[in-house]
Length: 600
Image 1 (cartoon, helix red, strand yellow):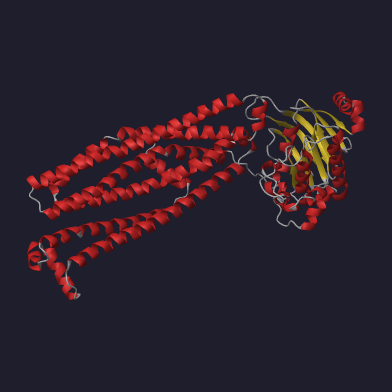
Image 2 (cartoon, helix red, strand yellow; image 1 turned 45 degrees about the horizontal axis):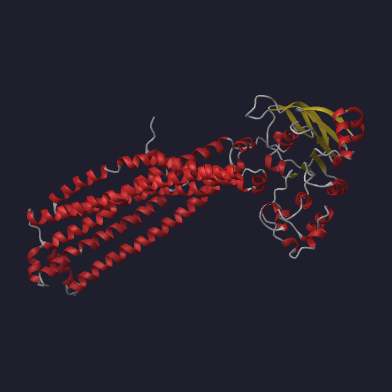
């Protein structure tokens, strides 16, 4: 079944939470504006009559019953009719029009800004609440474009029908005024204007397709920029600068071409109306003089209203075309939110998680990624004891990171169960569960801001003593205190001015200051040299001893985890061996060979 523009608007209105109350206020203020203008224009007729009668009241009384009523009213108010009074009244109505126009524009701007803020918040929240599997498939660059550009276009598109209604009502008022002045001329005008409105229909329909092309080109260009600009050195050192520039120029040209095409369609609609209305005005002038014998004041008022109709007609057509051109933005946002809602991370828990007392147990766990048929991990079972350090090691692609995601409940097992103290982890409330886990990713993810901003990220009760304690414990306190702004030092995006070890230690300080009972680290020594790696190992031992923390480390470096209480070896998605460092050297061939390679 074909979806009408009205249905799309209703869906879009719900999408951005545009309330009917806001619509009603906008329409009421707009209608008052229209009424003020209509009254202001209507005063030109008595002004022309007054000028034509040279101010003779007797002539005016004979010309119309309206003048009789006006003069009786002014006599009661003890006001004398004069040209100045009539001009002043006309000005008052036009001034009222401007005042209400200002009110309407300010209110519309506030609504637009509020709707845009709410829509972006909705997109942001929906993305954060979506599952890790959804994040695997969706481009951050595409989302950035939608939130910064298409969201604005969608909000404007949802507001355009309201403006369209206003212009249609304004057009109806003008036509009604013309009907009063001359029914015959107005009917001719309506026929001519109807014919004129048919001219841009093809361009307006084309605007839907072009608008979708604009959205597509914007999204592709934004996704490309986000992925490439983050790693300029990789492009330079790979010798792919010319290829990347060529690809960028193609995407850039596509965006330019579609934007120009959209602008041309709008321009065609705008310029095609003017000649029609000018011809109409000249035709009306000719007929009014030669055929209808209209008075000069009526001719003047008629032409004035016709000329006021010109921008209104253009606005009606352009608003309609504008609605078509932004349907692509509305549709892509509607589709995106629908997808993210369908892939929301579901919380199946109903009990609070307090503290790990005994152990974490993986029992016959399987997991496969949505894009693959084979299992990334299959039938794995192992135990992580509480208040000890457990290391999970293995070659790249063995399944270590998948195990980590399952432990963090970023993914759910396809088969099998994960228990914490004999309770299925899915029974714990997700927020409560994660509130007790501190996580340090493989690559430190440091946002724009200061050192203290990052260390206290997500912590409400961060105090100076705690900050000093954890920073000294992880060996970064002396370095921070040597900086001019100490903890207030700005790090920049990803803290590129710091060494890998310094970034890793700041990340570890962030995890420790939360005082969470479970600490999970993903390849924490991947960016560290031998000395920094050894220091980091000593830091972990100190943390384990001081805080009695359950530590789980995913690592490719055996030297950094050789002291762990338990080491689990993963190969091809299965547990191939487990034990202490000394035990594995004698029982696990892969572990023994890897250890020899590292220490030699």
